[in-house]
Length: 260
Image (tube, rainbow, N blue to C red; front, side):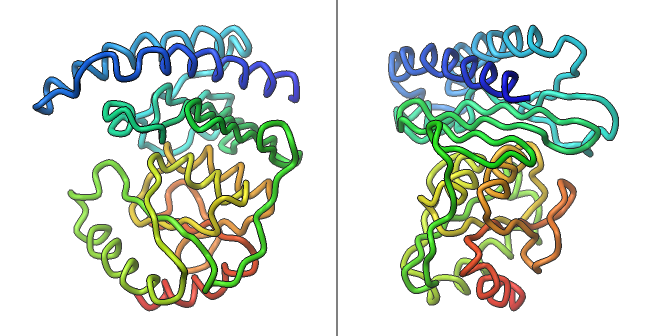
């Protein structure tokens, strides 16, 4: 699968260059409808470009778009992709957005690419083959919780889920006293992948969000991070919470989050 991963990375980089060349070309829209139209004008062509490249790689693989939120198909191969992951950041001319591509086989991810063009960061992973940052093997950095920079976010529709909304606020208040800083650095897939690369020590989230979590989860796990739900149980795409952390801080963060 290394050849497929390499070709997937090339496709992500091509789409990323196309999008980067167009970012900031138009002023930020003043209303949601205008913002959506401006985003669709670049995201839809980028998504078509990515789909064409990846379908040529695996013609029999199905296609799951970035708004997919159902259960993981348990049979066959499926591409799960987001050409412009981080719409808000992209439209605001911020650099924290990414092109993501994950190949699922019989319900499990077998490869993933998370490419952030304006950050100059590309994380890749093969199931059973480790993870890489810009072509080099990567791993979480050893930290103590007191020196850890961690991140959190919310699924796209968290505001409609009272339990996830409450847990997001309560967990932030619980984690803050134990770490150096808590940040939200844009798209979920990118933040989870950055746990694997060592840029972040941990990432947690409440609410089911498989489409955004799967790419980074494979990178983080293959790099050596601990990936679980907030209670410390093995994470599955249907779980309602998520935690990826460097091995040295995972247990302490689970203990904190169990109190939420």
